[in-house]
Length: 281
Image (cartoon, rainbow, N blue to C red; front, side, top):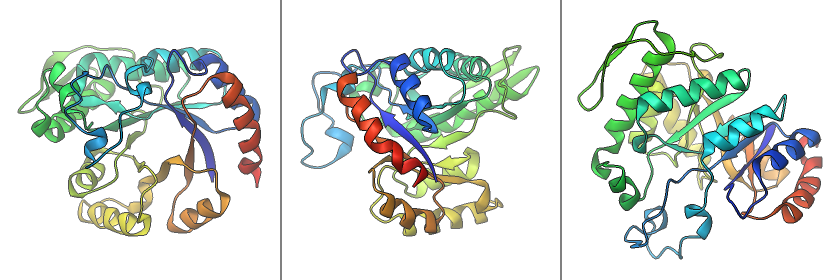
């Protein structure tokens, strides 16, 4: 079982370079960082669309730009894998996003993993001109356009919502054909269909019934003509619990990302010391 961490990196948390060095020194496999561009103060959308959700924690509107943060970590580490957990693809210009992904993969010498998701905050999306109801199709098309930019010398793409005339764009990613595309989602038919169509891994957040989810995902993959073994399964915001990890490992999970609190270095570094023995247990 590979063991990484996930965190909201903000102006109030441990800073990216410090965290990256501490993780690498202790043998953690990866660092995954959250993304939100901003949070409208109206707060009309409940947290993660959950009924009777508690107030949204302030780290959601304080996050560093994930690509800036991970670039700083890439420049100051050698082995640590770097992931977005997750990029809100619908809210990005796909041409610029493709360049960010490729550039970070080159700068990190192939250590980047592209965690993606659909998002839940309607107001945040609306500020970017995104219709919440069309986000599934929009993400699929933006990923298709990005794959073209990563893999074609003269790239073009024609979708219903996204278009790219024949173009040159470099750098190309170090990893071929591109960095792993990791779907961060609790599951459901649309997410599983998307994983089967264009993703390399599934990363749910502490799923309540992981066995059922994996079985359902495998069905989608098989119907799409893909070998389920091709798609890696991890757990995001995992508890530091080796017994639970062993249960998940028996189901086919190969990595966990321990959820770190939104906290400064004096809190985070002792936690890393506490969790480090779990890596080799």
